[in-house]
Image (cartoon, rainbow, N blue to C red):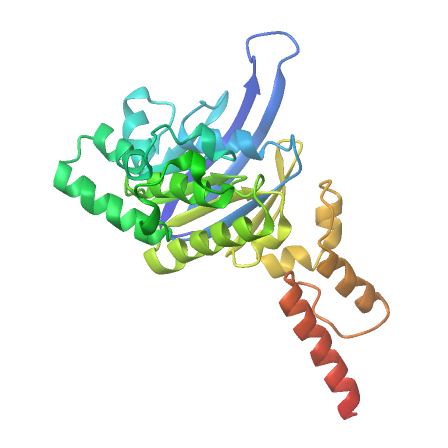
Length: 286
């Protein structure tokens, strides 16, 4: 793979590694992430995906192996500052990430800690707010915002630090469907329009629809890795990993089992409807 931004080489991580009965959360992971790509990591709770997110950001260090972020080893303490500037991490609960009482002050917090000049900070805050569609809320108090709006503010705070890559750990898990859609639209736009490398960790499989690549994790290991259509065309890969199939995928697989010529790699309700319409129109025209 060309333009590797992240390289994970034979990485394992165990909590309480020096103690008897240590729990291995990630085991012998090998992975490369290409700059500018959109990768989704799927897995049930306890599969190791959130541990992997923290490893990528350097928040925790591998027990074995090494991780390079833009050529910088996460295990080297002198690289921590630069790695976290280049690779931002957005958490599941935005309340754990928002620390100021005014939206624009919270977004400015990261650049201020980086020593960015005040004029440049203002430009970055304006740009980040516009990128996530929150410019009109710059003077708002975060506690007055909806869950989806808070998550977009947390994302703007990372954007203001101008990272090359953003890792999002279950960013829509606490949101309603409207909030989830807003955040996913923002993430997709940042990748497609600004070229930011996106790694989205989730258990909502429909969020993988616009990804370049889907990785499935189970018991701390990578069990599948491919394009979304390939992964969702093989439902056993998902069920073996303890994941429930989306209703759309389940429906299309049942139709295919009946001998109907449908594309089972489709995820969204809209594309599923289009696939069924195509099938029905084909039958009518015969």
